Length: 310
Ligand code: NCD
Image 1 (cartoon, rainbow, N blue to C red):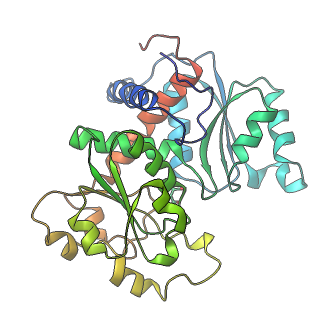
Image 2 (image 1 turned 180 degrees about the vertical axis):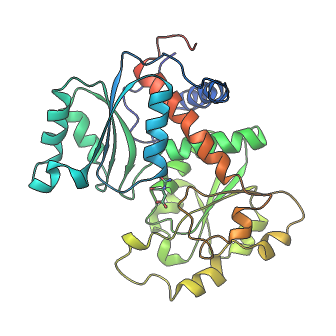
């Protein structure tokens, strides 16, 4: 059992069989995580560097826990406390770390495509933990694991990503992964937050959130990425919430279940109301739990796929 690619840079070119292998392995790892001793020796021969050139809470902790649960040796590196601030290039930084004998780099970087550059210069396997507004494959995989756990199959499932699609790496990875698995993917948001080429990917575009809710089985609500917006792309937070915020009043109009996901961090009262985030439709904390299992699965399949699960 191994993936077709040496690295996980994005979901654009990952075949359905590989996504299924990752999600299936993640189910086994989730079981291991519920044991009294939630740890296996599978990757004890592997050294992983978590290189974060951008802020992160969940993703970083989740990767580190996944690595430790698999008994890998783990080194953490963040750009704010490194020689990057002394002018060192990305390639030099990683080559120096690599010279200390490591096997795998988990990297988050603000530049889209930074990982593609990295694999040209480094021998290690690379996992993308987010590159600018491009891709965030493990987030999409954990979203998919959570959806599959709740509804069973992706076939013709209507999944709508709501919010700031333009600035979200979670959106693109979800679109690629879900489409590969047979779901019908849509996006919803103000025109200024939806890239124009998106319809070419076979994605339906809604600008009316009530219509999107009525036509969806799953909503993946994305954060308004204020730190990436250099211009006002909607009049005010209040107006954004009035037009696109997911509220219980909006969901109550539906007389059927709908699944609410959010990758976090949530801006409560902006893209998602607190009572919805904490309410019966929400699987947001299950996503976080599944994140560790999915990352264990990816690490296992890339770095140690030849070993048996114990
Ligand atoms: C996302 C990210 O960093 O891209 N969060 C995450 O990884 N859990 C989404 C976001 O920042 O809004």
